[in-house]
Length: 430
Image: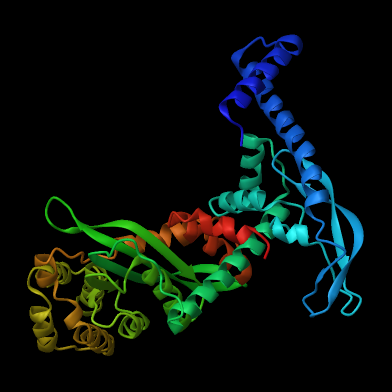
């Protein structure tokens, strides 16, 4: 890397060149010239370094081992272009070919994280980070505006698909290792109370609306009132069956320290798949139905039983929501038993909600949870549905392939979890 003296010399040389060759009539003009000089200097650097790096560094002798078990013979040097942020540079590197399996390889490309695509791993990682935040056209426009770097939106999408698929492959290997016990994640500090939240939202994928499952893992730290608030959230998202999603979420939870946490809490909206995953992966965890969702069920029953605009129904719902939070589900369950439905619609709604509250009564001990300082709302996972899926996959007119949506979800959750290194790692060709 450049040391202080070298940097000083470079600035002096560039300064002398500017004095001899440039002038500006405004601050804006000076800034524009600075950007052009920076781009030109960057291009000069890669144009000098990459060819000198590739040709001598790529030669591994007259032959090298082939994956088929035989020897691949050195056949000479072959040219390719490498796309960097500053310029596209042509380099020559050693090419080997096996006469047994007829496979040709350029080992230097793999060592540098390059594949058949033009762009370097650094460029691909940068493109994916921006594309995970913004639509593809906006992404390429922003890169050009800020860096003077131009890539077609179709190429940006192809790069994102490639890197996202590699991220999922790396996740799959880690999931298998954790489930088999062959991999034990390193956790620098055992968390105190670790929350695992789950929910589902929808996105238009492969021609119709499909559920995308969201998971959020976070540690609870008491606020001034002694009630937990979420910190260090980690996000997981995928459009896949519940069992597979459960393994993906548990992988992230294991990395967050669920195996060594003092206490684990699972929060959800009452959906059966959530509690099945909780029972399977988080034995002994405290299970909590999000209070807001429980109150939604109370209001839905009140509307079906008393009528949509009934003042009596609204008072009934408000009273029982308040009682549920402060005293638990006992009074509500008693009230449900005393109700006398007169229509099939009332009977159906009463049966449905009685079953919901009966099945989840042990997950609705809200006074007990509050005394212990626990969160009783799924705000973090609700927010996850919006920031992970809503803000990137559900823009006006957006339609996704399953592969395209999954690639963006992989990259976006890595960024929101403050793990951009996962994108950088996957951007390097295997």
